[in-house]
Image (cartoon, rainbow, N blue to C red; front, side):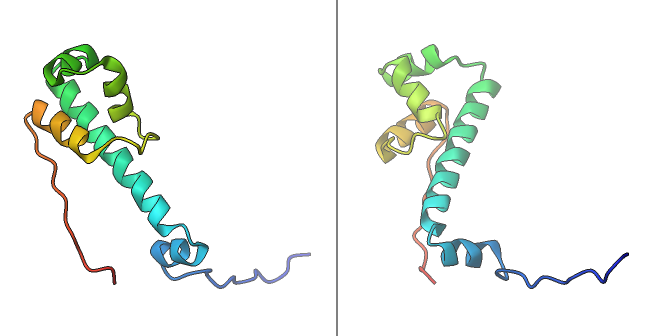
Length: 101
């Protein structure tokens, strides 16, 4: 016997509100930012046919450090390292300071 479909009220109006309600908004944003930066750097390397070894040599660092830079899960990479990696690929890192609201 078919019943009426229940309409569920949304938990939140937006994803941002949901993340805020769960207390994980900042953590999710930090992870997303690092993942996007890692992807953008990897894409720039791919377009330039640049290997991890070659990028490490340009930066005067180890391949292990390049693996950390390109690892979207590794959030311990310094801003200076990201900036140098971007510069080695002919890019620049751009950060914005915005209101918290």
